Image (cartoon, rainbow, N blue to C red; front, top):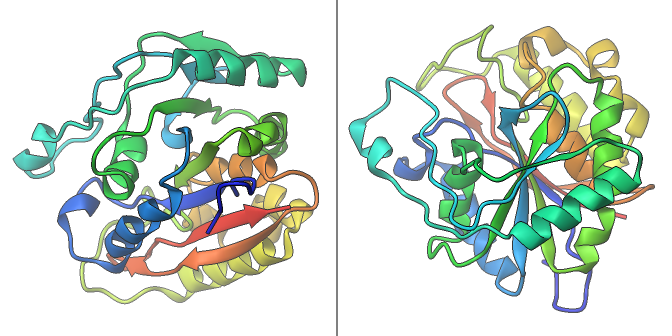
Length: 264
């Protein structure tokens, strides 16, 4: 992956269900093997599908709590703690980068780490020894604004900060539920194939206008939250970026678990 003197390519990962750390599935194995490639980084800036605010906001907490923002799962999940430290100075720096692009940005000194962040990171960095800062999404804003937010923070890749979007390549919850052991529907594979092609081509127009140009967007993403982190990560790679598939699998039927790396 990225060497010590190279820019850190932003990534997008699909974090699936909160039970991911407990399940022996390909996506879990992938994340556990991904982390060691980033042993030299200074911090992670995670754009999680599970933190939506009215305007972009960065978390600036020295010791962020582990947020268990889900219900109806095994009790052992609620006992998990991911004690990574925060980085208030990095948070302030991120906010200034975004503001310099004429995008308003707040700093939140209370927000902990939601499961969109700690689920993949506890697999990637089980020692919790990498500082973590979160950047929120805005469900009411159009996709192009999220790409612009990513472009605003593109310099972070040269500063030892791994920009990581965490959502879902195909996330039909609200349209289709979990079907453990069930087949993947054609509409899901159609959207997934379209997304992969758009990512590989680095096609900004397609990725931004997915609701009009992709097949079955209303099924693959009934809500925008799990798609927007991908656009921020894509934008953070800079203009002319292209993507690479670094993982592909399915979970519980139609939950797409693909992951991508973006390079300029």
